[in-house]
Length: 368
Ligand code: KG4
Ligand code: ZN
Image (cartoon, rainbow, N blue to C red; front, side, top):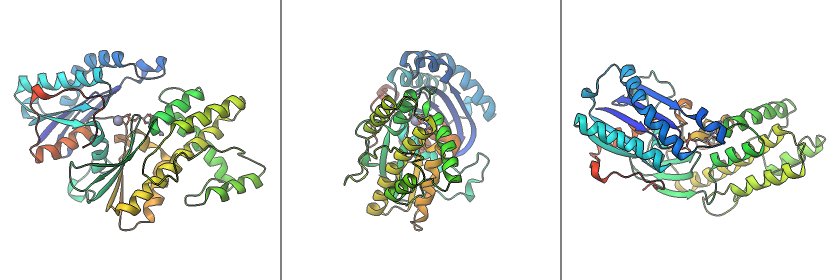
């Protein structure tokens, strides 16, 4: 089964071709440069860029795969969630291709894609037979620019949302705090770089927060050590009985801290902020593990590229030997079409095809 997948939900124009989960091509054209001057993604600019880029990306993808469109069995496309003008360009392009080449269509939820990205091994050149898929039940942690969700999957394509953010997504918080620190868009990687530098310094002094160590001990240690980091940010909802998240208060705490300390050290702020996000993500994920006893924990979305988060998740999974951890391969954490094609592969196996006249962009599409 050869699937060509199209992803245009935000600011990446992406097309991938997979042959039974073997990646024949994966092309991602980022529009970061276009949106950078605006400090975020401008929907109509994204639409214009997708329209311009889709034919170019298609050509590249076909060339890289070495196969022609006539050999493709189905065309998959992201239909939400995301920016509707951007989603529509991908949908219209997919419909046009399907009509012209008489192909079946498969619609994919972008968030399913982020989950299924973890169904691929770390490197592109792999022997699929050697790779063990995550076993069900799966607990999925999605951490992206628009979403923060804990999802339970008892079988393929079956999702139960256990918890989600009540306001900002984790990636959104990274981006907003980056703006407060006057860092470039997208802010996640920039904050992460600064935080890593601070983490190294603290590590050298034996002061970095250890996973599992209590926050109080950590703080006392810091206070004893000449107040290296004399402030801390809240861990919103960390002890709430549910599995929901909230990150907007954390962003506000950073805002006030910077207002009251105009000379604050950016590295310290980045570190403390990142650690606050990670603490909450880990605590809630662990809560879900204890409650649902999943056989696998899979993690996807742009924030899953965060080194410190990956490290903490690895440490967390060591506490649960019955459970295997599947972090999305680094190169599939951000938006791409390979993850859409992987999801479509399982949809095709379940004969879940879409009729073209019914496909609509759904900006607020939920997992169901
Ligand atoms: O999944 P994604 O590419 O797009 C959405 O579906 O939203 O996620 C993008 C988000 C952005 O907020 C970006 O700042 C964040 O992922 N991000 C990171 C890192 N790399 C990307 N956040 C923290 N640390 C990173 N290394
Ligand atoms: Zn995404």
